[in-house]
Structure formats: C-alpha cells, structure tokens
Amino acid sequence: MSFKTARNLGLMCLAFIIFLVSAFSYGLMHYNAQKLTTVITIEKKELDTWQYLLDLITDAKDDLYRYYTEKTDNLDLAMDRIEEVLKEVTRIRDSSHEEEEKTAADEWVKELAVFRQAVYAYSIEISEGYGGGTSAKEMENAALQAATRMIELNRETSKRIKAKISENNQSMLTAAEVSRKILGFMLAGSVLTAFLVAFFMDRALSKPITALVEGTRLVAEGDLTREIRVNSKDEIGELSRSFNTMIRDLRERKAELVRQKDYVSSIIANMAESLTVATLEGKIKTVNSATCTLLGYQEEELIGKDINILFADEEEETFLLEGNRITEATRDYQNHELNYRTKDGKTIPMLFSTSVMRDSEGAINGLICVAQDITMIKQAQHDLSTYAEKLAASNDELRHFLHIASHDLQEPLRKIKVIGDRLKDKYHEKLDAAGQDYIDRIQRSTVRMQTLINDLLTFSRVTTKARAFEPVNLSSLVQDVLDDLETRIEETGATVECEELPSVLGDSLQIRQMIQNIITNALKFRKDDRALRIRISAKMISRNGGNGGKHSFGARYCQLIFEDNGIGFDNKYADRIFGVFQRLHGKNLYEGTGIGLSICRKIAERHGGQIAAKGRPGDGARFVVTLPANPANT
Image 1 (tube, rainbow, N blue to C red):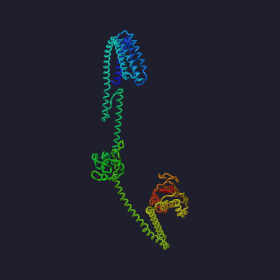
Image 2 (image 1 turned 120 degrees about the vertical axis):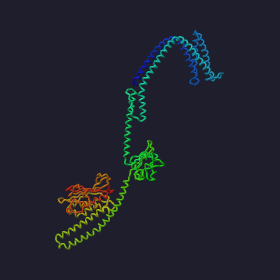
Image 3 (image 1 turned 120 degrees about the horizontal axis):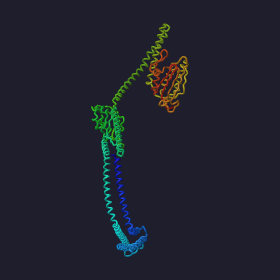
Image 4 (image 1 turned 90 degrees about the vertical axis):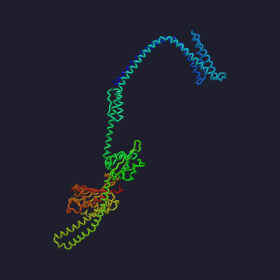
C-alpha cells in the first residue's frame, strides 16, 4: 500500500468516526435541550433578576474604583445603581412566598444600606474634606466589603436556584450517563481505527524512508552508486526521484572533477619545467616528474622536506622564507637565476620564478615554484662569447688584410700598369698585332684588378670606416650625384626625373654612394632602341609598414624609389643580384665587378633599413630603399 492510499484511507475512516460521534452528540444535546427548556423557562426569570442585580452592584463597585482613580468626578451614577438595586430587592422580598428567599432579600437590604452609606460618606470625605471619625480609606473598605458580601449572597441565591434546576434534571443525568458510555465506546473505536491507520501508514512510509536514510548515509561516505527504487507517485515517490536526480548530478560533477584533476595532473606531470608547491611553512607539498628526474630524487624523498633542499648556494636557501614562513616578498622573484642541487651534489643552473597561493580571504597559504634548466642556454652563451671573441679576432685580421690590400697589393698593380704603358708607348709600332693585343689585355686586366680591389675596399669600409648618422637632405644629395654623372647622362641620352625628397637620418657619404651606384646601374643596363628614363620618388611609411602618404604625420621610415625603363631582369633573380660578384650578364657585355648592388644592400642594412628590387625582362627595374626618416620632418 502506498503512502497516498494509506493516507486517504485513514482520513476517510477518521472522517466517518467524527461524523458518527457528531451525529450522536447532536441528538443527545437536542434531547437534553428540550428537557432543559422547561426548567430554564421557570427559573430563567429569577436567575436573570438576580444576575441583573449582581451586574448593577458590580457596576457600582466599578464606579467607585473609577472615582478613586479619578477617571470620573462624581458618584451619582453609583448611587443611582444602588437605589435601583434596593428597590428591586424590596420588591422581591415583598412578593416572595418562600422563607429562604425573603431571608436572602433581607440580607441584601441590610448590605445595600451599608454599601450606600459607605459610598456616600466616601464621596463627601473625598470631595469636601469631611473630618468625621471614619477615614476615607475605611469607608472605601466598608463599601467594598459590602459589595463583596452582596456578591456572595448572589452566588448563594444562584446556587439555590441551580439546586432546584438540578433536582428537575436528575432524570436527564441518567440519560447523559448512558450517552457517555456510548461515546466512550465510540472513542475507543476511533482510537483503534487511528492505530490501524497509523500502522498501515507506517508500513507505507517506513520502507522508502529507510531507503532514503541509507542512501543519505552512503552519500555522506562518498558512495554515489546507490539509487532509491520507489514507484509510487505520491510525495515519498517525488522525494525519492529528487534524491536520485541529486545522486546522478553528484556523480556527473564528481566525474567532471576527476577529469579536471586528471587533466591538470597530466599537464603538471608532462611539464618540461620543474614544478614545486610548498606550504606556508616552506615544506614541499607537491613536485612533478620533471623535478624528480632533474634532481635524481624519488617523489616520496622530497614530499615534506624543506624547500631549501632544492638550492645549491647558502644565500639562496633563505631568500624565499622570512622567519621560516613564506612572505609577500616571494612574489618579486620572477626569472631569477640560481642553482639547484641534485641528489648526488651536482649543481644545475636554473631560471627560477615563484607565485604565492591565496585562500578565499586573500591570505597566503602556499607557494608555487617553477624553474627551467638553462644549462643549454648557459652553454650557448659561453659558445656565443667564444665565437664573439673569435669573430673579433677575425675582424682584426680582416682589417689587417684590408690594409695590405689598400697598400701592398696596389703597388705591384701600379708597376704593371706603368710598365705596360711604357711598352705600349715605345714598342707599340715594333710589335706585331698579337704583341699589341697582349699588351692591351695586360692593361685591361690591370685596370679590372684595381677596380675590383677598390670595390672590395669600398664594400668593407661600409662598416669599418662608417661615420655617425646625421640629417641628410636627399634632394640635395641626388642633385649632387646627377651633377657628377652629367656627362654620362648626356652621352646615353637619358632623362632623369626627381620629385621633392624628404630628409633622412644617416651617413651622407654612404647614402650618396648608394644613390650613385643605383643610377649608374640604370645608365649601364639601358636598351639601345629607346631613350632611357629614370624616375626618383619617395614616400613615408608608418611603424607597421603601412603607407603613410607623402607627408604622413607620425611616419618613421622613408622609402626612396628608383624606376627605369631599361633592360630589366627576371624577378627570380631579385635577391641574387645583391650578392657579391653576382652578375646576370657576361663581363664582355657590361662592365663592372658585380659588387655595386652588394654595397648598396650593406649600406641600407647598416642604416637599419633594407633594399629590394623588382624587375621584368625588357620592361625595366624598380629599386626601393628604406631608410630611417629624419625625426624633424615626421
């Protein structure tokens, strides 16, 4: 039987019993009421009269109290009540035929006289200050005592009248006794029925409630596998289903927490860096596998140990703790270089950082230490330092070589050239055509060698003979170069167009040489079947490389652009043409050593800029040089 069924059955039984008891009680009360009607009719008038007299005396007594408490300023109403009672009692005494009633009326008259006299005297004493032999307090007490005696007389009279009613109702008492017994049996039946209902309800409730208690106990112990099986649709069933829903939610949340814990544990376990978690007292609470592998310890050998076991140097053993406790100062240690000590006593350079842990109230309750083995970095720094020393020595050797190249190698070339000139001047006509050709070849080779050496010296001096940067007016610089190349420009029939150019920050001599090399290249690699046109322009670009416009506010770099309609080149060689000794054409077609554009690139890079080229065979070339702009015009 379900809880709902047991509840409904119990309520129905109780309602039926209540109906029977109520119906019987109503019938009995109706019968007794009919009997009592006769008695009440006879005695009602007498009881009402005496009750009325009692009310008047009580009201007079209350008037006396209100007069005493100054809630009224006279006792006229009280005196009127007393007079009315006296008249009514006198009437009852004169009209009564019973001796007891006459005696009671005489007692009432006597006490009323005392009461009236006391009230009157008390009123005079209070209002006019009468100085008689009886004090106001005594008169008040006398009045109250008289009122009390009259109340007692009224009670005795009521008892007498009720006794008469009791005699008339004796027969009704027998009937009432029978009714009481019947009601007793009915109440006993109600108790038995209630017991049976409680028994069945207990049976209906005990099983699911016991299951709920057991399930709650298992949940408290951490077991979330137990669900309650109740099929009823009443309140217990609803409670059981809610309990099962809670269990399933707890299982899902527990599983999610386990997954998150495993995820975090996996991250910590697979970290390449050393991770150590310490308590507020500086005791190791957690270490990852990287720490154990790095230091050669087992995890249980480190748990509970002082965190200073990690550090190799004494001064590093106390920097985390202050008074054997972690403090706010630990947060300042970020990327701090120190040494760890392994189990076998070796030292390992580490990049060390810390972060404090806090509870929900913001108080420090632990420390997280993350350290990275920088042995390879230290070795790389050492190797880099060694390489830098070797590079410095190599540069010294290079400078020494440049000194030789600029002096010792030039002298033999000059002698070869002088001897060749003398041979050509004195013996030119005596030599046959082959001899004259040999002398011409010697002289051309000597000139190429001198040019090559000079170009190499120029290439190396971009950094070795560099000057400090200063503002450079590009318009003036380009005009100076064009003046120097005026004859060559006229010979080639070229046209050079130059826009107004901004100023840049750099080495004016090197920038001049770079501009001259680019224009010379354009004059050299021209097409014979059309007039050469060279256009020079510039634009400012912003920090992120975007186009800032010709006069862009806040631009930082200047792009110097050279465009021509010469022979051009295949764009796949756009980077190769800047290499040393790199040529796209034979030396018999175009003069030069293949170093000019290499010098341009080195000059641009030395200024913190760059140079780029773009070409198309037969359609010309475009060179873009990026240089830092002069802050004065940005």
